[in-house]
Image (tube, rainbow, N blue to C red; front, side):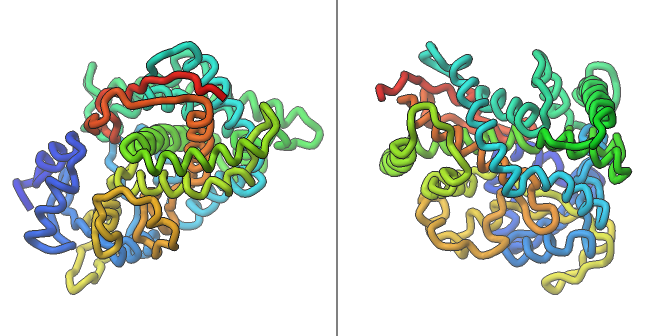
Length: 437
């Protein structure tokens, strides 16, 4: 269990900063103790579990045996009224409200909006450039897509920087002294809150002023505000869930896109197959015709490439749960109040599930993957609510880049670091030139 109270937290953080949590922290302990072992992290006795059976047991027993358990700093910055902190029926209700914008009809309406956002971004940020930071560029883009295409809020200068200041404190010690990461993050969170409350109240006033009430603009904020008017959701819940959605959607998606391009650069044969898929889609379009949801379904190989990239480089390492009762598992008793940490790498890098797991092989996704084996978006009742939006962002961005630009990585072997989420250490700069169509 390591040192009193501190436990093995320092070793955990050290491995995390290098993006080597599995290789340097989890794997050596699996070798020594097996796929389930105990430690002490951030003051809590913690059981680390690995494998599809463990993922299924703990993720599917959410609200019954375990509940989501985030550090105090994360809860204060994301908001105690976000779905990450809600349990049972309240979680289902809030998730249902958010999910309405990401059903088939919602996604169909989102595709042209995302296409327009991507094209505008490329025109204003990429046109005339010889070099761009792919990761930084996609962060700016995915941030604006969440706000403008999903929520219906115009992005103002400085908003992304304010959100990033909040993210810096998400896993920092929750100590509020001037100049600390957490203190700066709390200050930024208050700025965001003020801005979102203003937008929500303005939308509520506008909707109440209409005879029919209505939410015909199709934006998620309008649906949430409609929930306020009907008494289904509070203003605090709307604001906290908008904050959470922005964080959940843009950093992880940017990383997934960056890793997809890294793998394409290293595997030209895969890139040739992917490019042909997009050329075929373009050949059935008139100039400037937008993509549709049906076109997304044709991008089967592209999605295999993205999925394989996220298998090798999952945007999340795993997540913590807390036992709400004594749990009997694999012959052990996990005491009530202990933490449980499940990991994506526990299956993604295991040759019991993926043959030759460290090799890049998109074709492995031609066959269905058993449940709880491939978990870059989690699983169970807390499966990422923005999963379909992330998929749209990735497919549409890849389409416009590969059909409009020739590109190459400036640092093919760029290292990945974490602070607190993984990212390419140099921002993944790429050389670009317009493709001659």
